[in-house]
Amino acid sequence: MADALDVVVIGGGPTGENAAARTAGGGLSTALVEVERFGGECSFWACIPSKALLRPPEVLWLARHTPGARDAVKGQLNASEVLAHRDRMVQGYDDSSQAEWARGAKLEVVRGHGRLTGPRTVRVTLRDGGTRELTARRAVVLATGSGPRLPDIPGLHEAKPWTNREGTAAKNVPRRLVVMGGGAVATELSQAWRELGAQEVTLIQRGEHLLGRLEPFARELLEKALRESGITVRTSTQVTRVHRPGGQGEVTVTLSTGETLRADELLVAMGREARTQDLGLETVGLTPGKPVEVDDQLRATGVKDGWLYACGDVNGRNLLTHMGKYQARLAGDHILGKQVAAWADARATPQVLFTHPQVASVGLTEAEARKQGLPVRTVRVGLDSVAGTALLGEGLNGAVQLVVDERRRILLGATFVGPGVGELLHSATIAVAGEVPLDRLWHAVPAFPTVSEVWLRLLESYGL
Ligand SMILES: Cc1cc2nc3c(=O)[nH]c(=O)nc-3n(C[C@H](O)[C@H](O)[C@H](O)COP(=O)(O)OP(=O)(O)OC[C@H]3O[C@@H](n4cnc5c(N)ncnc54)[C@H](O)[C@@H]3O)c2cc1C
Ligand SMILES: NC(=O)c1ccc[n+]([C@@H]2O[C@H](COP(=O)([O-])OP(=O)(O)OC[C@H]3O[C@@H](n4cnc5c(N)ncnc54)[C@H](O)[C@@H]3O)[C@@H](O)[C@H]2O)c1
Image (cartoon, rainbow, N blue to C red):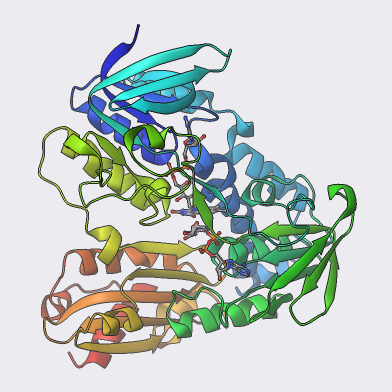
């Protein structure tokens, strides 16, 4: 017999956890179904371990730019200590504390693979092979995330390449690493493994630029920094063939230029695929293997009576943990009967690349704003225009650009490049999401001597 609850959430990553906590917090009985680890990809093989690998080299880099302190850090990074730190940050790949949290949040914790079997019904294949039938009186929320996309390149699958899993969890530093892709995963992990001691890191990007969505000045500054750190960046280049007999040992990568590269590991970082293959979508009229399309209330489009929601990576709207959590809160509120509509994931999404220098952006780029026909003006200043940057370290620099809607005199977007700028980003997110008029922003006085004074320089450059 089926267990009846108000809400069933499939997928216990950050998105599922937030959706479930929201509905349970609102008094609805809620099950959270997880097949692998509560905490999801983000906690164990994505955000947390990658940032744990990137932080120690960043600190070293900052110390090397700090007079006096640089004398204290003449040695090399201790890679095995960094890997041990990574292991601690992922709690030894043990999710018991997350499961404990879920129970504390009054969730019905179900470990197993959830599949829709029809409207409002979910069958869970439990770890011991048994099954459990769940019905949802109000809603089912899909939060099954995404997995790595492996394109159909001859020999690639057989070569057993690293994905984000091995790329964040490896126990040893490869001597030679080839990275396929030029997005966030490729740039962050190339830098991490290079700084941890990989002697040859080659990044292969099909497009003309790395990080195609970023403002051109930002991607240029980052690409320059990656090259300076010893990473070979090959743009407008494709991998056409991979050869690695038995999926182990040296891997040979053939490029569209006809050249071949030899490496000890190959990391594939070419985007993500929504985890919807084995989710029973066909039983409710949807197509497996594709992201679940949703409306601004996060309800799956084309499903009668609006009982099915999809949040986070699985809907393909915005593949970032904080935006999945944002969608989850809104979906939870909608299930609880509140009037909500998601818009920040289209107009005010913040993102930080934890490379050094960091790249932090929010909202629309100049090109996106122009494409929308908005009356745009940009202002850009260097980070060396404020005393705070010189105090942070010697020879540090970067730049910030604002995209202004000239008609409404509000910010549409902002991009920061430089040391630690990730922590400056929320000021811009507040201005963009809050649509704060520039004349009012002028009265938000940054403290001296912080790097935040760059806001003052930007508004002065604008003409205030
Ligand atoms: C290397 C890397 C670094 C990243 N760094 C950042 C970062 O710094 N900041 C950031 O914001 N984003 C980052 N991201 C993106 C971020 O990881 C994702 O946006 C985030 O994990 C999405 O959360 P989610 O809950 O939607 O999905 P996931 O984290 O993928 O969780 C989905 C969960 O659902 C479970 N599941 C799947 N199918 C079923 C089923 N049928 N039944 C039961 N359970 C199921 C899975 O086991 C998993 O636990 C990074 C991604 C990568 C690859
Ligand atoms: N710090 C962060 O916020 C952070 C860090 C890592 C990942 N993420 C998120 O996780 C998601 C996945 O990241 P990702 O880097 O895998 O995806 P992505 O979409 O950011 O980048 C994929 C890259 O692979 C390239 N590519 C795709 N197919 C290719 C092919 N056949 N040949 C050559 N190049 C090809 C694309 O041009 C692109 O540069 C992204 O949405 C990203 O924002 C965020």
